[in-house]
Length: 313
Image 1 (cartoon, rainbow, N blue to C red):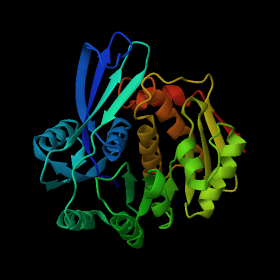
Image 2 (cartoon, helix red, strand yellow):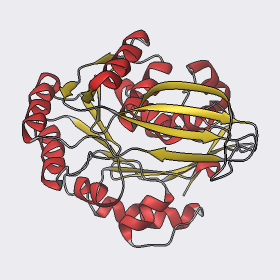
Image 3 (cartoon, rainbow, N blue to C red):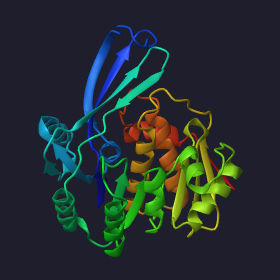
């Protein structure tokens, strides 16, 4: 079973405008749509688009929270959120005709200690050995590193597998708990290990191996249209995977979440390391062709999968 945790869930509003965004002036949108958001929820949406199932956990607040849960129910995505006081945040992205993206993200609600304890109690229903937990995205204002560590430790101590998609202090904290998989992009990787960002697969591999030494079991480094590098303590060979020809970003937003969803789905199905790598890149690149955070269906993913090439590093 795949369980996603979104500590700072949101509603994602996407506005499209026909001209480049002009700050300080009136900009008219030609379309607008709203969908449930937050990285863990996006991973659940990706898993669903690929034909899999997951349970989305996290916090929900106010009328926005109820709207989010209704949307997930309509999409046949299972959820089990802890209701808290306040109002769930709304994240807004503006996409212009040239493909430019402008994002404005609200901070979210501050949690009470009792809210976190209720989440731990809710998690206990899903801590069966071998289950796959995905802890992804930011934390609410004031959320302590101690509580983040407690989440990771609880998952690992019960024999569950843990996938981390986080950055900065959260990523460093999670690495101390020896997650099974981490999925940084080149900038998050460079910041964590103290290197310069690079899209050269050999240079990325050097940095990724440092992250293995810091506690990760497997590292998948996403590089947008340049593909991804995969390295694991349990595999003799590191892999670089990309499509031929390259697929350049159109939607871009949510492609990393799509990749994490594909990794979780592959682990749940017991795919080989190289199959997981190809499937993850194909899912991300197929989703990059779509608007907003729309996730690619299995049919679209397989079309891209046939174009993937694997190189041994």
